Amino acid sequence: AQSVSQHNHHVILSEAASLELGCNYSYGGTVNLFWYVQYPGQHLQLLLKYFSGDPLVKGIKGFEAEFIKSKFSFNLRKPSVQWSDTAEYFCAVSPFNDYKLSFGAGTTVTVRA
Amino acid sequence: NAGVTQTPKFRVLKTGQSMTLLCAQDMNHEYMYWYRQDPGMGLRLIHYSVGEGTTAKGEVPDGYNVSRLKKQNFLLGLESAAPSQTSVYFCASSYSIEQPEAFFGQGTRLTVV
Image (cartoon, rainbow over all chains, first blue to last red; front, side, top):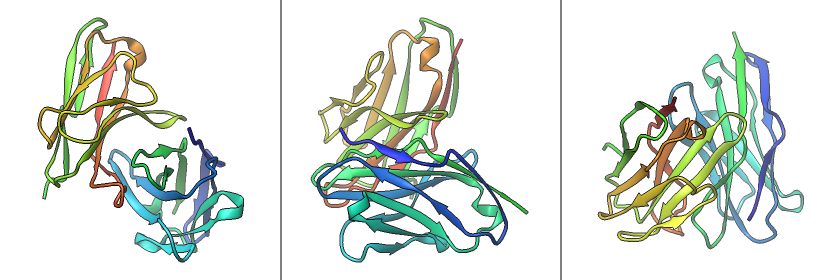
């Protein structure tokens, strides 16, 4: 079974700072990649997804992620964070011909005003 | 459009008690999942279903049972609750292998004392 590693457990930023969250997975085949966000007290919502094509994908709320196949990575970025980006962020992976998602442990992002 | 609805939202059980968590989706999704979320461990798959009348074990199935008698509903049962089952439980659904992104319910916070 594949595993998903998120490098940062907790990131603290000031508003307008740039954000980058790392995600690596251990699966040798073709994969589908996702980033989900969980705002305090809420359910998980899809931020963005990558299935194929352009390795730089754009999602909602100004987030983007880059798939680097050679590094088995799918890092999430946002150029300028806002206080409302305070949340927990999860990277998830599924094999191309599968439907079950494997999640990373999550990264808590705290944005200070 | 309700999406994925979970009931109840909160529950406190005594050790040894039983309960059933209900998940309902109105998106005509084939696949449904139950995850548990624990601090620092991300989401772990308990059981899943690939269609009406089917169920399968996920990563952490022990102590849980599931049923999917109707396509729109996926029930998670705890026959004899243990403190180790204190967690937040999320139900999710997805449409197909070609569209594997999962949509999540609001979660059920369960405490076993």
